[in-house]
Length: 308
Image (cartoon, rainbow, N blue to C red; front, side):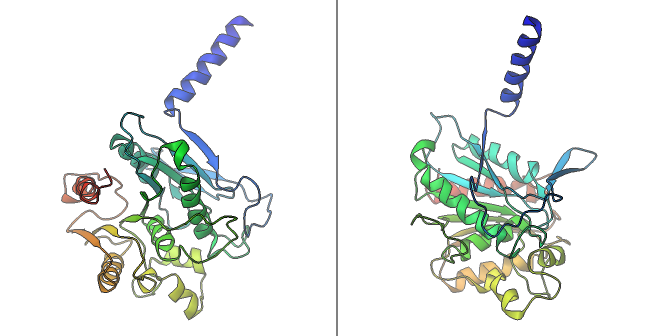
């Protein structure tokens, strides 16, 4: 019995250490807005790249995984991370936890959002499910700012691919009441970072999978316009840092270009890095090509904006 107890304690400690002592909390501890119960719809994990890259599917109960930097390094900045996956999965490691670890090295608190993936099987209105989760996640970070050593005016958002669409949606629809928040805490990010993002639902440049998953096969013109975020930019849209590759054959580079031009037209500060090569889905970078330098450019941008 004593041996079993020792082994159990060792296993628990090993598990805690391997996850960096991070905490995961529910975005909606009580009622999930717009949710419909479906006992047959259960969360799944698939693997890509020979089992090296987990992809989380069928998220029904969204969570925030909290990555806090060392206390002596924390600078008060916080970033919500939205992994991509075409609104059908979440690339939780290379577009989520790996990004969080990098931000922690810079003294930034990072929060990986496992948002609900739009589905008529579990949502009354699948088009707003991810936005509801994104808005509430920003509010959770601000509500807990004192506990997590965060400055409430330095809360940003980053998104990759379809996660970039969610990040830009939160950035352009932060004042849209898609649920009853229960308090007056702002859902507006103070800044945004969009990496090879889906931006538009315009069929000319939209990522078809993300478009269909979010707004359906035959969306109305109003729904297309509502979630084409280049058309939703206003003067109070947060400043943005954009990254894309010209040879991206999954999400066309025109998505980033249109968003950048909309920001420019509305006098919103923006910086865009377009690389000749890189393709899509590279996370922090995966080669000696120039796209691998975007984290360095982002670090400089964060410093320039006094976020480090």
